[in-house]
Structures are given as structure tokens and as C-alpha cells.
Image (cartoon, rainbow, N blue to C red; front, side, top):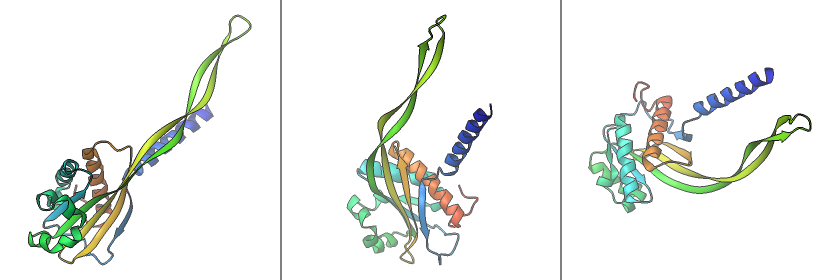
Length: 202
């Protein structure tokens, strides 16, 4: 019984650690001289993705899920080529009345192969009275997983400087809307912890 309780405790601890590390933003930097909290008058939300459709879905989702930044979709102002060089479009964007820009770039995608252990149960027949006992066979299977990395950056257009940047990594991501949802939650959590957003903001 003691070993069973020990195994159960280990599983619970693993689940708790997983829950605590659910934020996809694993690396972040913030301008130390930035006044906090940040006052978002009007924020241009721009994503650099593989297709215009994915870009539109992602930008609309981020704006909907992050109302505190007063965002507007970048696809209404910038083409895909312009979005890749947002820094060069600073003057034009600022003339539209934007105080900040939130830029999300797709950095990399890679497929990894890994061995997944598994256990099969079997039954053996005894010599006497057809006695049966269970046996277990440990095997491994080769599986693949996709890892996708995004870079998230927040710029102050009035000061023309980078305020905050972070990297988000996903394993086997779903559709682009679910990725945008996870990113928005991760960004909000990071910004509340760092003071960019008040803790009461959702």
C-alpha cells in the first residue's frame, strides 16, 4: 500500500507542476525604465504568419481576448510585407493615432521524434489447475511531435522603443485561434506579474 500512495503522490505532484507551468511564454524581457502600468490608448495588433487568413483570424482573436490594450487589427493598415518590417512603418502607423504596437511573429516550426514507453498486459497458463498469472511487457513506440515558436513584442510608438518581448513555444498546437487564445492568456499573465497591466485586468 505504501508504494501505491507514493506513486499517487508522484502523479499529483507532476500534475500540479504541469498546471503551474502552463504559460506558453517561457522567456521574457522588459524595459526596466518603463513607467508602469502602461497606458494603452490605441494599440496596433500585428501578426506575421504564413497566410493572410491565419493572420486575420489571429489578430481578431487577440483583440477580442485582450480588450485592455484597445487594439485594432493590423491587416486593416498593413500588408503582409509591411507587417514584416513594422519598424520601418513607424511614422505611418503613428500618424494613425496608435500609441503602441503588439507584434507576434512565427519564428520556427520543427518536428521531433521521440520514444514513448508503453506496457502490454498478458496472461500465462500454469501447469496445475490451469492457474493463470498476469505478465507485463514493456515496449516503446516511435512517435512525432511538432514544436512551434512565436516571438511576441510590445513597442511604444510615442517613444519609438521596445517595452517588452517574450518567446512562446507550443507542442502540437491546434488551430490558429487556439494558439492566439493561449498566447493572449500567457501575455496577460506575464504583463500582470510585471506590472504592465493592473492585476485586476483580464
